[in-house]
Amino acid sequence: MTSETPAPSGALPPALLGLSTFLLARIGRTARGRLTEQLAERGLRLWDMAVLAALADFGPQAQRDLVRRLGIDPSDLGKVVEQLGAAGYVERSRDARDRRRVSVSVTADGRALLAELEARARAVQDEVLAPLDAGERRVLQELLRRVDEGMGERRGSV
Amino acid sequence: MTSETPAPSGALPPALLGLSTFLLARIGRTARGRLTEQLAERGLRLWDMAVLAALADFGPQAQRDLVRRLGIDPSDLGKVVEQLGAAGYVERSRDARDRRRVSVSVTADGRALLAELEARARAVQDEVLAPLDAGERRVLQELLRRVDEGMGERRGSV
DNA sequence: GGAAACAGTGGGTCGGAACCCACTATAGGG
DNA sequence: CCCTATAGTGGGTTCCGACCCACTGTTTCC
Image 1: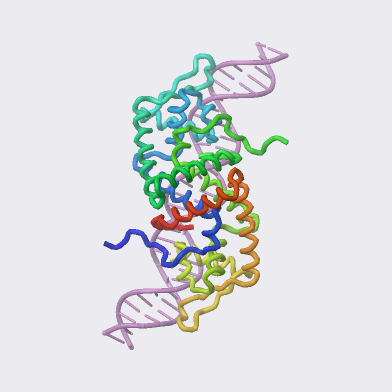
Image 2: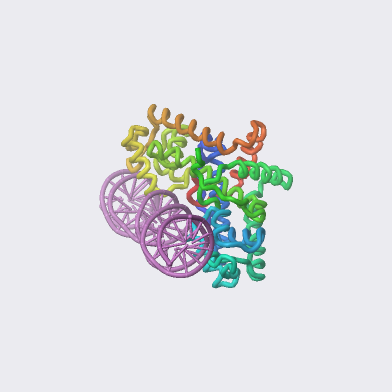
């Protein structure tokens, strides 16, 4: 019944733990890691989820819109959409008005998948935020939302 | 005065923004990235700072202790210490009691460097947490600290 | 009708982080 | 004294995400 985790014997340096920057980096990394793990169980990555969410929330749109919205590289998006398409989670069709564009839409299967992924994400969340009660989680969520809003977006937003 | 950042035209999917997991992943990634940037200007990486902080906070110790404390790979730590030593930020000496061990301590230069790095980290923090006032930052810090404490530590803690 | 801009695709590169193994030197227990 | 465990070093590999270029087809503007 030995722990699966090697686990540091001592505590981390207060000099680091006192920096929100550092905590954010550290916790964010863990959250990201666990989320990625969950997605990997379905053979997916963060971008897949982001694309599905964008399509579900904003409706069918051209790849170029997804590129701008998500800050993903056009080439990479192509690959993501290709995979999602092959698996039946999204559909692609040439835009009749502008035949350069490929309009992408999420299928029913895609929506179902997204729901599952969101559930997994929420599970990760419950794990990570375990020390906080419901009220505190709401406060945290709100603070994070505002921080996120204010962040000058650079590349690779997701 | 055109923005240096390409910047997504539209907003991100609410389905994602509603997940704290996602916000943490995203913000944490940004924080980490900017911090890494700052360190890179001095030719350093996160591990360098972590090691300096650990030495400053807990005093001279063997590499093996740093390995356990920080959850870093022993081999990687060796490289970090080697670099820091070459630059004069830490000193290494064989432990007289147990000559297998290499005791590492931070030098005056190392402390000065650490102070500078902390200042840079705080600058990043001011940037990232700009939307929050002082009180809110304190709340956030406290929530993060508790979340961090509760996180079952896996590998690569820093 | 031709030139220039744009959407998308395919095929890469590059750098970083995590990880791992083989080896030396030392310690400590029987 | 031998055998095993430990500390550290050197030299790798592997994986992934971000990035980039060259190219095709299409539109737009003159």
